[in-house]
Image (cartoon, rainbow, N blue to C red; front, side, top):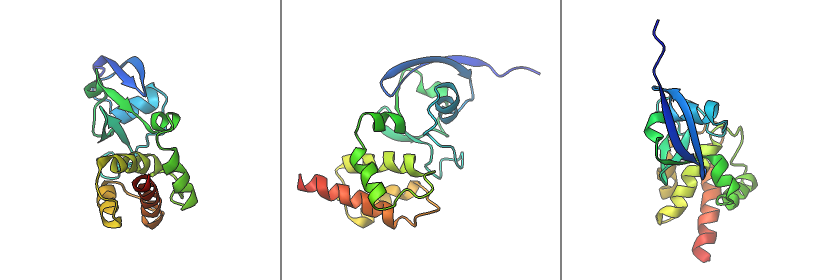
Length: 161
């Protein structure tokens, strides 16, 4: 039985250079979780539908379960740990807590990264547009009302600033 080929990967994760070897077919989600030790990126459906594995790939949201770790070679990845440590999403995190938008918490990292992209998109922050933007992220607990409330609150504060 042949072993799966391994490849060397050099990627910037949350601003730090990471160099590692990984199986050629390893997903970016598994790479981040098992080789880099960043477990905030969750693996749900492994089909790109649920959004639990959402990360930023060169500044744009991407599904890390559908991206091979090898595809990240030479690129920049930001995870929930990175955007949390930088303070970028502190206001969103506090709003999620206030609105009880993080019940079981499994979808929360992907929701927060997606919400941050929405807030930076320049799109009008109507409830309908927030729901549409979040449509690629699945939550089994909240019914989305609390999540939309939290994002709308922060969007309103940014608009008033």
